[in-house]
Length: 406
Image (cartoon, rainbow, N blue to C red; front, side, top):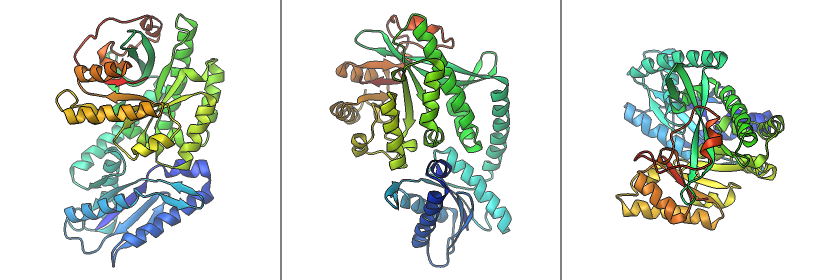
C-alpha cells in the first residue's frame, strides 16, 4: 500500500526564508512522519516537497484512507523551527496493491494521480485512487494547456462586483473577479480553473495579470468621477507567501499612481497558516496602508483567537456559516456572534452566502453593507465603476452572495 504526501506551500516558504530553513523544515517533517508511522511502515523523500510512504498491514482502501487522514491531522500542529513556528499543510494521494496496480511503478503513478485529486479538493485532504481519476487527469491536462494559451492570447477578463452600503445605497468599493473567455459570450468563473492553475504553477502568472489590471482600473476610476474608488483583489497563497510580494505591491502603486488605501487584498485561511511568515507580511502591508481581508473564514485553520493576532481589517465568513440564517436560529446566532466579535476587535465582519433576507438582515442589524447579487450583477466594463458608485436601486433578485460589517 503506497501513499504520496505533498507539502502545501513549501516552495513559497523555501523562497521567502531560504533553502537552509527549508531543509530544516524537511528534516522536521521526516522526523514527525517517523514518529507516527507504524512498525514495518517506510517513508522516503521523493524529491522537492514530496514523500512516499509504504504502509504495511493495510487490508483495504478504507483502511489506507483512515491512516492517511490521521497523518494529515498530525500536521495541524505547527512545526517548531528554531524561533519560528510554521504551519504547513499536507495533501496525500494513496493507492492499494494489488487493487489499483500490480507493480511498484504503476502503484506510485496511481498514488500520484490521487494526490492531484486531493489538492483539487482544497489541500490538507486525502484521496484514494480510482479509475475515474484517470479521466479527470486527462481533463486537467487539456484544461491546463488551454489556460496557457488563454494567458498568451489575452482571453482573460476582469468583472467588477459592487459592494453596496445598505444605509446609503452607495457603492463603497468593487471586487475584481477573474473570468476566462472561451467564446465571445461564454465566461468561465475562476473557481473552475484556479485549482488547475495552482497545481501547474500558472497561478503566479494569473495573479500578476489580475493585480496589474485591477490596479490600473481603480486608478482609472479615481481619475474619472470616482475619486474615492477602492478595489478588492483575491490573492493566492503562493503569491502572498512569495518573498517579493510586498515589494511588488509597492511597484504597482507607483506604476499606476494610486494610494495604498484604495487596495484591499483578500486572502483565504490557507494562505495564513505559515505562522510568523504570515504575520510579518501582513504587518508590512498594514504599514504600507493596504487593507487585508480574511476570506471564507470558518473553512480552514484560523480560530477565533487568530483574529486578534492577525493584523487584518476585515473578516468574510464562509457561506456555510450563514447559509441557514433565515431558517436556523442557532446558525443566525453563530453568525451574529462572530460578526459581533469582529466589531469588538475593530474588524469589519462580513458574511458570505445565504439568502437575500438573511444576508440583508445581518447587514442591516449591523448597519453595514451588502455585496454581489443583492444590488448589481458583476460588470464587465471598467467604465461601469465610475457610474455605479453614484448610487443604486433596490436589489435586482433574491440571491445574495455576501454581506459585510464596515
